[in-house]
Length: 162
Image 1 (cartoon, rainbow, N blue to C red):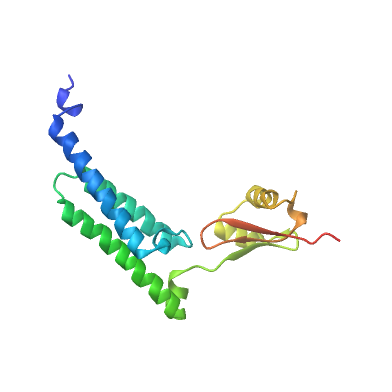
Image 2: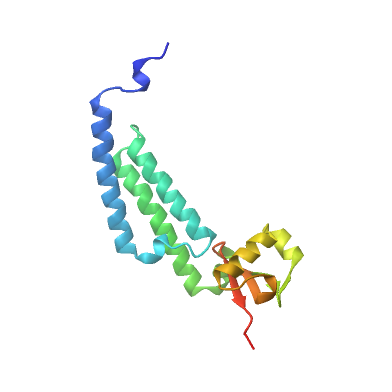
């Protein structure tokens, strides 16, 4: 038999989530506005990881009864601060930038797929064709090159019409 506690344990938990959720959300918005647009960009894998970590931390702050609001906001602030430090180092030190960011990969050149690069990056021919169609082409031969960008998106460069 199911206990009714798994469905509802009283209004205090609901009210706590409402209050903490609103305050944590407002705090996160303020932190993000102060730190700038780059904090939530998805330019590379590191940026994506920070975005996911912020969401996970916000969810924990809202739902955990054992985590005081100030501690949760501090955790959000630390993640954003680390993102700022990493991006600052990336901009001011090329060696650090190469460590953090991947380089784009060429997956197709002159209409010919580069099979080894496609296998390494786990990209199919159908995905190449889809990126070419999104750029206005029809098939592999219409593309000069297709790149797997550092953010995981595919970019197709179409051949010039003669």
